[in-house]
Length: 130
Image 1 (tube, rainbow, N blue to C red):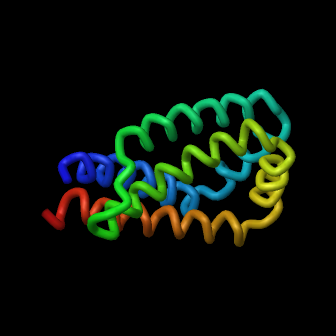
Image 2 (cartoon, rainbow, N blue to C red):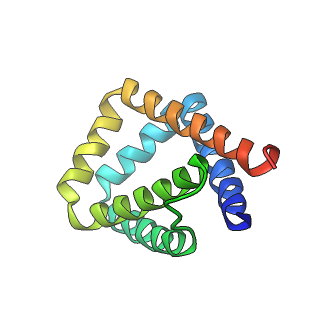
Image 3 (cartoon, helix red, strand yellow):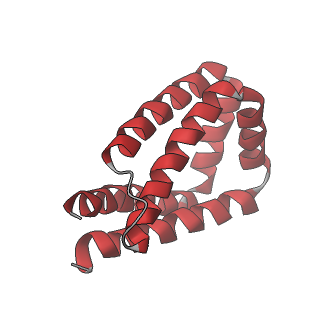
């Protein structure tokens, strides 16, 4: 349980900051997507970072039973790992997603909202629900 609390705090803070950032500063994240589209080596670096981070997170927290928020952390860990792998292995799919980000503000704002809400839920379980 202690491990889950640490992960909830860590992911909660990061997701809350990123989600709020996307919602409050959409243009910055759009430019970030443009950078990935214009400079393919950035995609490689992002893929390597996501894969490494995902491996560490899955190895540190891979709990499929227990409370729902603990399982949510495990699912997030696996999503980070799988996203890193897909970014490296299926670059055309990554470029398609980057183009969605560049050209569709509704997709970005929806993703920002989901990330922010997930972050806030994890912050609650990481800090308040003990």
